[in-house]
Length: 407
Image 1: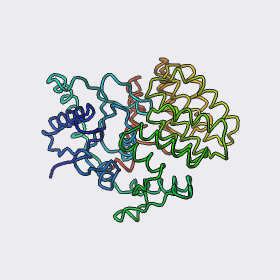
Image 2 (image 1 turned 180 degrees about the horizontal axis):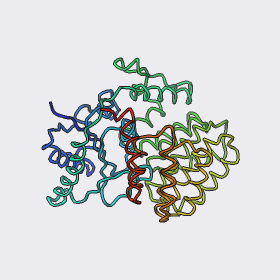
Image 3 (image 1 turned 30 degrees about the vertical axis):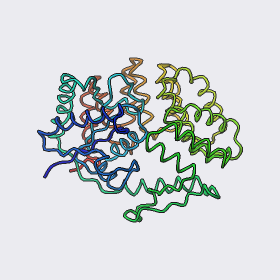
Image 4 (image 1 turned 60 degrees about the horizontal axis):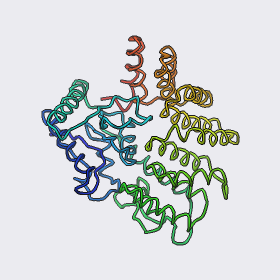
């Protein structure tokens, strides 16, 4: 029986440059995996819809291997990549050599490729992918998914609906769950033509301009509310500058109460937009002022830590390393239970060549009661790089004991 490799990548319309590159990558991946008995599957081979279907989720969760293409910083790809990371099962990340690796995944070993339209470039990428797979063949591909993440996706989207609330009139979110996953929560919706749904569908299609137009219509119908902030954060994450301006305006001059969750979405949209458009340094002063204002009025230490982590991400992308260090150190003080903050801080220390502090940060990661496989892997790599093989071995033992990695 063939093993399945699910390829998560931007696909694009027929004849587009994105589609041509995606097809070339699919061929290269097929060549690399053929000797290992893999069946290679891409999303458009199972569905013509851009919506994340039940079958796609199962492939993300349960395939023996998942290869994700981060080129283009596509929001769907990052969402699906995150879902794969949660499982602890093998994955390979690819990104074109002329693009920056986003901050959130910069600590994960990633293959860069170039000129795959030429035999030399294609052959090099085949060899690199094969090298990863050889390691997986030795270590095994882990246990099958439990389905728990499928339920969590549904529950998460239901919670989002409750946070958005009823928008009234023609913009009410009234869609029903797909029959085949009704028990997992109503997270796949039939679009009803209202602006909110049009935003979501446009983003799933990768059409940021259409999403921006729908966002404008949403503001005209609903007005300056927290619901608008939620959607503006989504659109801003695709690099749409008018949505960034909208977020600043809503947060700085709200027309009603804003929940911390909605502000988080908006702030994350600004940071992601700056990253995609290489505007981190340009936007840093304005973002810092916004975050400082939020911190002054935020009672929750956990939320303060989130705000500071977003600020740190932007500083890091701008190569403002001392500022990133200060923001990261504040974040872990406010929330010392979040392993991601220590990993992010360790990345800053590494750039500053503060190797002892890198190890200290990773010690904090390993000592936490709850930690992800991804962050343990980052700790193992940091320990090995700095010559702490005994600590790397202990972290590896803990990694092997994580439920998602048990055979």
